[in-house]
Structure formats: C-alpha cells, structure tokens
Image (cartoon, rainbow, N blue to C red):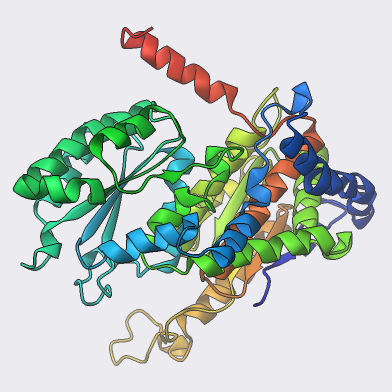
Length: 472
C-alpha cells in the first residue's frame, strides 16, 4: 500500500518561509521527542510511574492499532474488534438507520470516515443501493432543539420501503463517562423514542439496538446494564476523546457503515512504522511538525489552514481542528486551526487569505486519484458560457490547475504552503492520515513545552454550564 507524502517546498523560501537550514536544525530535538514518544511514554504508561508534568499521559492511541490487530488475530470472535464486527454485521439485515450520539472526539472521526469513504448521498440511496448498510445520522453533539426534533421525526418516518428492517433503527451512544451534557440529554430523548417505535418488540430488540461505547463503571455503563444492552464496547483507558478515532469510538460506526476497519488500522500501523524508522529528511510526521512549527515561531503564522481539495475531507479537517486546538491551545500557546474546502472557499475566504493579514500557512490536502470516471466539460452548441475551448478538459484536470494556480498566487503574495498528498481516499490512507496528524500534534505540543493531553479549558465551561442550570 502506498504511503501518503508531504511536500514542504511551498514553505521553503528565504523571503516568506523557512530555510532548509532551519528545518535541519530541529532534527536532533525532534528525534529525541520521537524516542520519548515511542519508548519513554510506553514505559511510563505501563509502569504507572508518570511524572507530574505529563499527567494525564493519554499516549495509548499510538500503540492501540497494533494491540487491536494482534488481539483479533489471536482470538477473533472474542476480541473487541471481532465483537464489533459481529454486532454491526448481525444488525445490517434488521435495521435501516443508525443514530450516533456523541460530541467532539466521540463523533467527529466517525463522521469524517463516513463522508470520506461513503457515497456523498449515502443516506438518500435505496437500501439495495447501500448494500443493506444503514443510513447514519449524528446527534448529541449540540443542544439544538430544532435539529434534534427534526431527526426524531425523520427516524419515526422509517426507511424508503415497507420491510420490517426499514422501520427499525439503532442507537450508538458514545461517552466515556456518560455525564457529558449534550450526549446525555440526547440519549434521554432518543432512547424513549426508540422504545416507543419498537412497541411490543422493545423487550426483544432494545438491548440489541442500543450499542454503548463507554468506560467501565461510569453513568453510561451503569445505564447500559439497566437497559440490558447485549454488547458494551470500551473507550480504552489511556486514550483521550480526540485521539480515539481508531478505537471502538470510531470503529463501531465504521463497521455499521461496512467500511474496512482492518485496512484502517493497518494504515495506522504503517504510519507508526514510518514514523519510527524513517530518516528525519524523509519522515512525513517530523517534517510536517518542523515546517509548521518554524513558520509559527519565526514567521508569525498563528493560523494553520488545512485546505482540503475535495468535499469528502471537510469533516476530516474539522476533526483535525479539534485535535490541534484542544491539544496544543494551552498556556497562551498553540496556533489556531482552520479548515477550508476548495475550490468552494476560494470564492469566499480566499481574498482575505491572499491579501489580508499574513498570519497563515496553508497545508493543502490533495488526492491524486478520483474514485469515479473523470467527467469532461463537454462540447455544446450553446456556447454562450465560452467553455468549448476546454471541452475536452476533465474536472480533475481543472482541479489540478486550480491547485497549482492557487499555490502560485499565494507564493507571489508571500504566503507559505505545503502539500499533504494522498494517493487516493480509502480506509488504509485515512488510517495513515489520522495517525500522522495525531502523532504530529503530540510531538509539536512537546516542542512547545506543553502537555498535549488533557483539556482543562473545556472542563471549565462544563462546570459553568452546570452551575447555570442550578446543579452543584
């Protein structure tokens, strides 16, 4: 399988970027941080002897893909991955929709995978066209009354046919503690709605159709026991929410959609091996960190734009926004992440990006091959639009011209760019990209001298919200 590539050449410039000498000067420090992540973190985590400045040490995400694949090979049906496949595959013929309740890292990775790997109109396809894979919706990520009410009504209306399966849906509720307000409130609404829809079938079906992903012994775990859920999957210890996409948090929704979870994890393992063994000059993780960190420190690039050149990766960009902001936005440090989708946003934000405050670096995410046949503009006798001169050009060719034209324009105005180049979009490549960005975030946090794990600022808003609701 091909690995993704990183091309920093659009940021290597004496006038507006960084120099190769600056990049090279970080090599020893980044190599030491790699050793810390690969070796020291594991020893400290396993022993429990964790220094105060590294608390919490939610480093398990790094070796989790290998753990899961090894467990599956050793005891397929009894492994957590095997249980996930059994539940998801076992329900495909019995349901037509799944609602995923979760917020932040408890849903953003799953949504990113759905949008990247499924048909863009997956939920509008017939059951046959979906291969009996369920429609998927995401709630519990806000306290938006109208959005929740609309989804409840949509679920009540069932599928697009009259079979028993098309009248049933399932709930995947994801929360480590079960106490997160947005998700808990949604579960209070969606659980009784599901019971009501099931009617007399509730006694036989409710425990099958509610699939929790949670920690052991928390509120949601206890509620799952009360409901009689047949399977409860774990949010692993030592894995923070925003680092949990390759755990059951992301794997359960992915399995319901029929995505290849094995290749997803294998892609992450491939990126781990590359990170651990590749020389500094060829290491996509360390080069990505070096260039972006230097631009922030020496060129004032305090806004890091992930510029995705396909609609399919917009939610992946939003996932990265949370990952970077919540990990490294501490102690007055850290850059501000921003996702743009092009060429769409060239017609909205780009004017400011091109000629406004010069405080941004643009990390393009470029996909080399499309999944479907390339569409040509086509010749027309109605040439009022003047497009016949490019009638033979395809949409991918126009996209390539736009990418080069945009990069050239940004460089002309002294704006640095880099390219993350994906050979294609599939679960293996997504596994690589998820893991690359998570590792890079940790390495950069430590380069900044902060702990990239934990999110004290988020906890404060929760306390204030509960106080405003009259709760202790």
